[in-house]
Length: 108
Image (cartoon, rainbow, N blue to C red; front, side, top):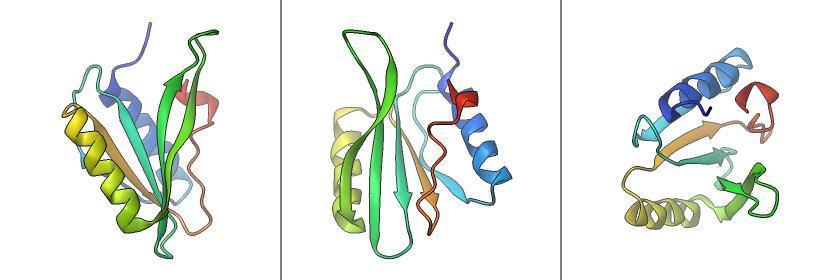
């Protein structure tokens, strides 16, 4: 059984908060089954965009890098993805050290 997207987003934001990392929902997608993009802003003019992907051979889910570079370029990737999927969530994480905690076992 999978968690609803809104529950997962709440849990993710709580993990970040407990580690002193601000995170903002910049696009609220479908509460039940919307996909999620994570924009990691390192506050130096660059960012990285992550998307959850499923390995079709194993069924395992993992986070992959969708875009990286100057923040305006990453924002353009977000806009493009939102054009394909209006139910998409976008969470912006701000951390100078580049921490995102996407590999935290509590989020599985």
